[in-house]
Length: 78
Image (cartoon, rainbow, N blue to C red; front, side):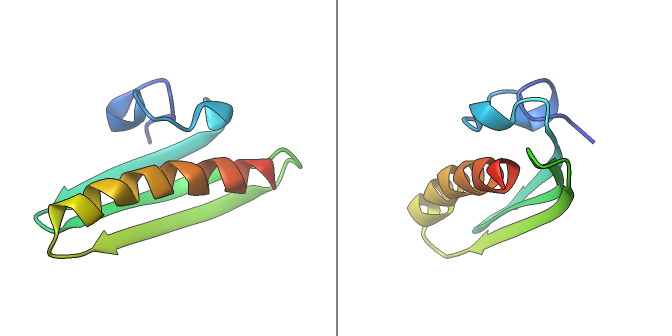
């Protein structure tokens, strides 16, 4: 799986504090954005992370990507 901040679609992720600490895959369809994978927390625990946004407004789905980045950082900070 791609590593946040290193490769894949998450190379440009805003979740800078989690860079290198998360292996996640993104997915998107019309009206849907998703992210799933593993995040290594500061405590050494590995967490499974899954988030899906489904809405008919493209603005809401695009804004969800910022929420995904915040969720990655929050999980990594455990």
